[in-house]
Amino acid sequence: MRRHLVTGGAGFIGSHLCEALVEAGDEVVCVDDLSSGSEANVAHLRASGRFELIIDDACQVLGDVVGPFDTVAHLACPASPADYLAHPLETLAVGSKGTEAALRLAQARGARFVLASTSEVYGEPLVHPQTEAYWGNVNPVGLRSVYDEAKRFSEALTAAYRRTVGTDTGIVRIFNTYGPRLRPGDGRVVSNFIVQALAGEPLTVYGDGSQTRSLCYVDDLVQGLLAMIRSHTPGPVNLGNPAEFTVKDIASLVVELAASSSPISYQPLPEDDPTRRRPDISKARDVLGWAPTVAPEEGLRRTIKWFAKDRCVASAC
Ligand code: UDP
Image (tube, rainbow, N blue to C red; front, side, top):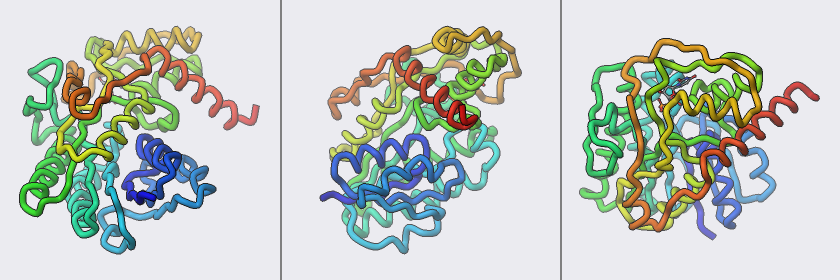
């Protein structure tokens, strides 16, 4: 049986990864301080007898975790702009101290280390679509830098561990991902729009809505993560769905799929909000044999269904 440590394993993507590893028959230790994750995301995994949740800060606790590991997957980090802008110092800490603690643990146990990096390392991209060879265009002192630079530092530290002490490392750059277990209030585009559409409230489009994002369904993303965990490739490798939409089109699609009559309400564009984003996934296809399979319309339909059911349960209907 393989044993994995997942930091941030009670979060949105982390909980789906833990679930996939447990379903594959493996054992998982999840470290999460529940700052943006939730115990409810992983409670069902306990029945397997192969899942343990340690509620603590990855920066503090990793030195004390016992036993062998085949993998250390470092996902802990606020990922919604609203969350990391509200917790700038914690975001920088988990990207620096947390990444170092996770790398040390992996090195000490002879485990593969997988870093969940981000398309935000490309900042406001001057190359489109973004390939891994592109170095990015990040404002190092802007509001978003607490996330972007923390992840860029995480990548640099990961590459340095590989070069200097030979840790088996892998970096994935995750593009916008959506699906069940997105926190309704986390502020990201898909969760905001779905919650607003289901409530019949106006959809808050920031700016004129012409900025683009490419949306990947969480099950697809997890398959990419599993492929990275099971390989020895260093990356970085982009993981995302190249299906690119303007934010305004995402709003229209959600309204249509939710059979909603919500109007659009235009709001100010946040500082340094990237104008466009789309992954080139040639490398993921070549080195991991991975590509997404769920069309955005289908993924959004499933996600809307999950939100509708969740809201229904919440109101005991
Ligand atoms: N956005 C929006 N309305 C919202 C939330 C987000 O128009 O209620 C826009 C945001 O300005 C950005 C895009 O949707 O251009 C994606 O935002 P998100 O916060 O999901 O993640 P990002 O890709 O910016 O990290």
